[in-house]
Length: 444
Image (cartoon, rainbow, N blue to C red; front, side, top):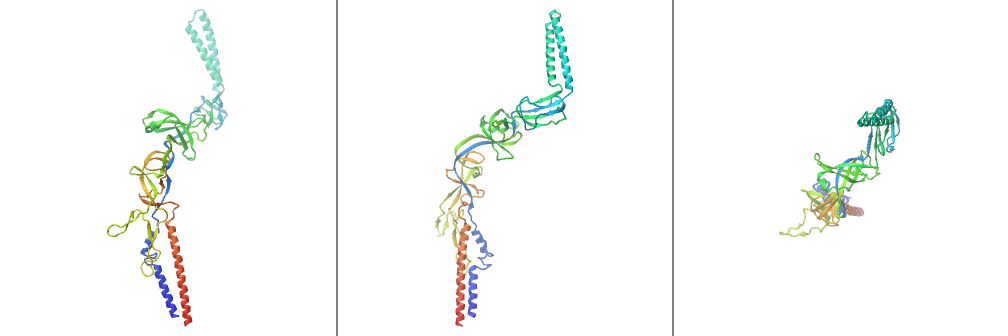
């Protein structure tokens, strides 16, 4: 029994030495713990790329404006009075000449009676003048004056007759009632009663920079987007361009017309206008976010699979790896303890996946819109450029794609394999100890 106890103690010490101890160099609390954690971090930058290829790109000018109608009328009563009838409501479609409301004014009856009296007096005076003119008592000038007075009296009577007793508010255009500011029974006059808007002829007036004047011409297309609904896009056309420049703001007035009958936008809406000045159908393009700037120079990160650096033997017999500071082919990762009996040598773990490297490439840009930028020179069709992850990249840095194998997975697989081997060895030790104890018992 004494030999059996001594054997178990020896086996326990050997197992502790192999694991490196709880606070030893290879344990989680030792100096090797931090180094081991660093070895598990993949130095490659995760990026997303897009292929360089042909596509459409347009040059645009941005501005803002308010939707309004080409035809709009504000109706104000010509005289004050009590509202006795309202024929339309907001949103109703009206025709030119249609009566919208009636206002009662008693004083208009008196005006009508006065107009009739003036007409009768003018007729009598003209008859007298004509009789005297025949006898030569009055001149032609006096006769013409009497005739003019009669015509004026007739016109006044016609006006008074149309508004006698009631004043009618009539729409001067075809359109839709946008505002009704009248109420039954109130005394109206001196302020707007109705607003009628033609919704079939909408426009947006924008002010564009003077520097873009040479790029503007009537007939160019534009896209209108409501500020509070970026999903809505309405086509428009540049129909008028002011011949003068506002010296105060340095802008030129441009009118964009919506298609006739377009009702997606409404008068009063604040919109963003994107005016297209030029378009190329088969340009070499990249996503706009792929372009970065270095001291004003446009650059992109082009990703390609390269050959790993080869080892060289310089003078003195030292072995140095080419590009060692920029990108390492592999890491040393220890799966066992450090030093002492039972320790294992550090195993070289290669970074999985292709050897991808991001190279910074200067490019010359052409047209550019919200999503796409034209590449005039610097790239070839099929090149892959970084569109996500380039913020912290350096020239020559190693990168990986989402689909590439991860270093963590390789290490986890190796650790699992090592753990299985250790468990197998531990089981063998336990079986050996049991057999030794059994043999000793049989000898005793």
